[in-house]
Image (cartoon, rainbow over all chains, first blue to last red; front, side, top):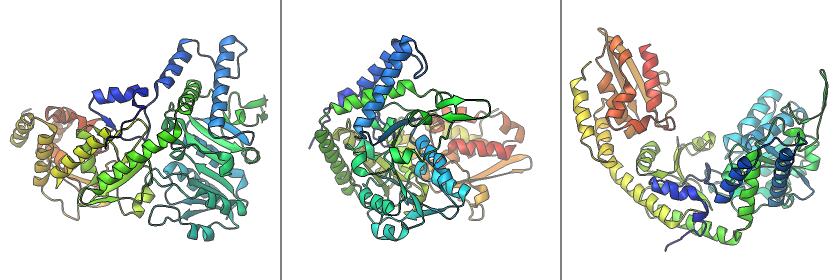
Length: 401
Length: 134
């Protein structure tokens, strides 16, 4: 059965990659960009760049207007309403570091931070290092056999010493939704702060931060078909009051003296220095584009492709999936074949997939693997992309076996 | 500086290989011919970091000539390393300093294996070889 993507032509890079005989299936790493975003970037730079929130001149007013419009669009995308603020950072990693440093004064030796065994390094290392700085205990929630955080274990591990819970919404290796409502409820019952790493989750479906009820929600623009160099941090108003400024410099200050200063509240107080203005404006254009799509149709397309991927992998001998992927991606290894060799031969055939530890070394170690191959899908992929991948996979395995 | 005989033969073999599939088969054949590294040599001190697979490299000067040995748990990188070793083994320290190894892989039609984004480890192996050769 053919599964064409009605949105493929909206992403000019896909055709360009095809002309270079490249099939792009590494979308969990980063995505191609819609024409609407390219147009917005060209329009901004062609019509007068200016810094935001500083200048009284007209170009500055235009740039600030476009910049703040994007902030509104992000807030609408997450249904933040009046519940909190959208802070722009230089990436999801930056946003998580902002939290780990900005919340640091709240922690005392012996306090516990809870994360899960499947966290990306970006949602592991900032907390690990904070724990080391403050003599805290980092508690790791284990997974069940399907690659989902084990709630039975979590209920014992999230306790009165838990001060913060930071978990991924959707694993970048296992492709499984995590049971956020239950986990967040456990954390809230202990008055702990809650951080959701939405880097993968935000790309699939719409998520409502008010319904989720988390204190902080983090994602990166470039995985959501937006420009790179831009991360988003949603913070609930009450939680933001507890967040201290982390980076200091231009525009985040209310009043500066040589020996002391006062800082702005969120969001500007957490946006020191010139922000990635073009990227913020570009993300706004991407969200306009996405908001114009039939999101049920997108979800159905992605589900059909994912099913196609899983069935194709299951039809081949010796393939072992990591966990039970539900959507978006599948990571696998092949019995008796080194993933580096397979990656080498897929690359030779123009198949762009990711091989290695996927920035989740401890998780791969738990599977007793040095690495795995990951195929990850986007709305512009179609079944022909997957057929090319399967042909290349068969060729590679024939050579290697 | 003339090519060692085995290197010249390998060069001709690779230059006559028409496509990626042929080159992949050849790489595996060269890798299979690489003498196995002893378990003693497969130690952490000899590990080359920066590879997706495990790669070990040892080298010593014998009578003024470099002799390297290497191993890996992955076949493609083993083939690449085998092609490297047959180019450098037997060279004097001065000769090794002068040799343009990226150009060697370029002549073999394998220059893409040295692009900075490749994590197969050939770059890391070359770097380690430089360190060993001082």
